[in-house]
Length: 477
Ligand code: UD1
Ligand code: CA
Image (cartoon, rainbow, N blue to C red; front, side):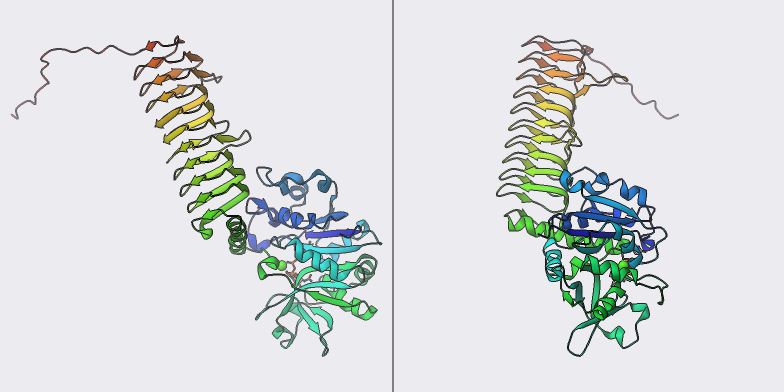
């Protein structure tokens, strides 16, 4: 929009009230660090530069890409944006005005500068756009909000005609000024050349002994630059995170936004207040999601997918018509999980990285699948483990059967041909191949390959002793 827009994000503060070793702006909201949300909001403005001012926790914050992309890398930025991101240190931290002073040498005189707080994650791109438009390279534009009680914030001072005259910080304000409900939210847009001049004139003669960015307002008025105020769509947009309680409140606000967006697209959430998305979720039509489900990383749900209550699903692609019953845990990790069309998974199933279920596969309760392919119609319905395996079409994998895939040093593969029946409690000692159409007797320990169509039994033979008398209890003496 503005070819010469530079953005400064202040993130040098300590965040004392979080009582955490982690820098405040790296605390997670919806699976992504606070700072990542702010950067995401400015990406849409196509800024020339985004300068993050760091101090406390600078090294961790400057680790950059990973810090912004979310734990699973699910929010990676376009590489073109990553190239525009720069960090500048503020040490020691002498106030918000001092923070912007550190970034000033990197700001182009020809343009305009947007200043944001790194700990205000729900700011909308549209609101920032309105702020930048109000500035238009010639006015100082402030993002303000009117509330009943603005305690703690910098208050907006206006003259009798309503023109903005300045900002007074709460600690410097008179009792009368403290009754003002309009406060400065921490975001402003300014013509860069003027901003630099105002910054150069700041002093720290105030209640906190800090260089206040907010003092640039009075300087603008004194110099004849018009000051305008713009309001956000809602209060959540300008809410900062200072404590674990506020972090949790904004988490719910973010989740509600995400839930509403999905429902507007036709997804049926049983309860938007009991839904958590910590990544990206792509849904087809007629998707239904019951309560208390958590989605992480990148998940896609095809047309008509039903997800039961209390499922945790990460990095998975679930095809049309599949049903995920309650209490199922799917974690695709780095390799992903795929669930085929009309498959049925759970309740209480666990799919781990590399589980690839074909169409109409059934995975039942207490069944674990890892790095294994199950072809169309294969079933493992109860209490089983399939790891490092290729399972053919229509295989029936009995209750309690497991692949012994690990010899203590290496993993080995198990290949089960189409239409094999694996009896209950069988142990398939990998590497092993079971030919198509074969049958494995219950309780067998299979350590050799079996040809197609064979019955394989590997267990102690049953012995029946006729008329066996059970030991009787001795009479009491
Ligand atoms: C600031 C505003 C206040 C406004 C409020 C909105 C000033 C002087 N006051 O107050 O008018 O109502 O935000 O939330 O600007 N930071 C640095 N370096 C510093 C100090 C702060 O990078 O030396 C960063 C913090 O990490 C934070 C942001 O600046 O991201 C705001 O700092 P904070 O201490 O929260 O400002 P407030 O005193 O709340
Ligand atoms: Ca603050």
